[in-house]
Image 1 (spheres, rainbow over the protein chains, first blue to last red):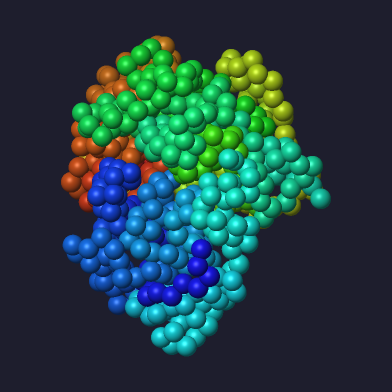
Image 2: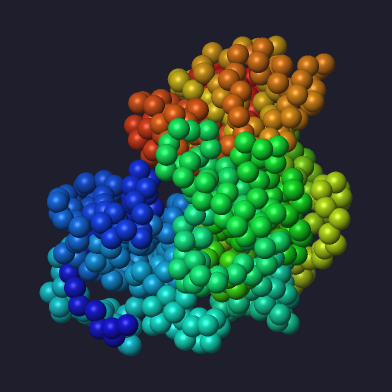
Length: 186
Length: 431
Ligand code: SF4
């Protein structure tokens, strides 16, 4: 795992549910077939209402039409990110689109677990309402060792809540890799 | 320091003397449940990760119910059931309840209870967010994604962060016009959809202990709609009587300590509560039925793990007896056992089935059906700008089919009364 992630921010509101992240009609693609799997990237965050996509202005698609990857690597959300169904396709779709880190005030538990255990994206929590302080397109630098976020565009710095007990799983790259590394499974 | 019932069960499963909220523990899973939507990808991950010689950690602890996309011509849906069937055959999974056989059960959370898999004091993990339903049996149960389930399938283990517990106490005597659905909609309106995120929701009080197991399951079922990790109700004589008919397994009765520490406590007197709905498009969008009465509806739906149990149909029958519905009304028994009970359970000399048929309702086969929309040929699905009143648990845009449709969540009494009138109706007006 990288210790520093630098990328452009994509900002969203509260209660981004798994249907907005990847609508149910797209769950049919096989994850094992690379050509089908990249469709998850294409449709990531495709059901977020237009005016709420890419705040504060809105009307910014996360993934451009005809593309399979996003130009944004860091998603900044509000509270209750990932609520709804237990579908693991949600954090998977964000990863396929190229997202590496999510920063939100809080997560729905199953989404949080899926992000960490599948090794898809790093779900950071913050006490601040960062989605009101960061703009879509700002360049952010995340220092994972020190749990710091620097907004390179504005020069502001914010603290992130330490990943705590899930850090070893995140660093290993997911639950299975962690379990192998720690000798739990062969 | 005292512990709550959830903390005690997690400590026991982790082999520890005690745990406290925030601790990360590895649990030994007693039952892993999966279904036709998440089972196939779980099996895929398990095979990839554990290789050709992948072994199920304990096949007697694995339970598989095809239930979501069952009666459909959709190829992908049928491919999923085929994967489960082949897997069950290859690995000799006895607890597989195949569709098209006499073993077919229907909705997983209800089937778990009926088949005796819900055992107080144990840990049940399922690949479905409503796995919290089983907490009605004084056990820890929660939903996970496919990677976690694949890991359990190979190792029997899962890590969990011990949750803080919120306590909800209902006092007073349940009025005949209220059901467990009204109680949970009350809570959701008060705490909102993330009010219990990463927390346990413990229910007690004389009104809760007066409820049947079916009704207790409704209460725990919607813990996830508040973001809750699990819902839980301690064991009492009602639980024990239900279990006696379903299992001969022995079990631990676990109770919260007097000095257990809670995140927060809520208390309600049920005699002061009224029938409620959750308006479109969120389960916490609470209103009293009186506030929205008269709203025209196009469909009524009585079904799902939340509202398709025999107790739900007993409520609906009280209203529908001797009356006719004035909008298309679906009766979807959650399980095949409930479907049979519709024929044997009587109200005023008629079977529930007769009552629903005489009222003009459409009785469907047991499955999840339109609770989550499903393929285009799914019975009861919302289309276009339908306004449906439903006993199910979620009303996000598109959840029951059409993204333009509006769904009101309500108790079976309120749904039945509204079906009769064709507009949202307070059940007290027809009782
Ligand atoms: S009935 Fe609805 S909520 Fe229950 S398991 Fe099926 S789809 Fe999920």
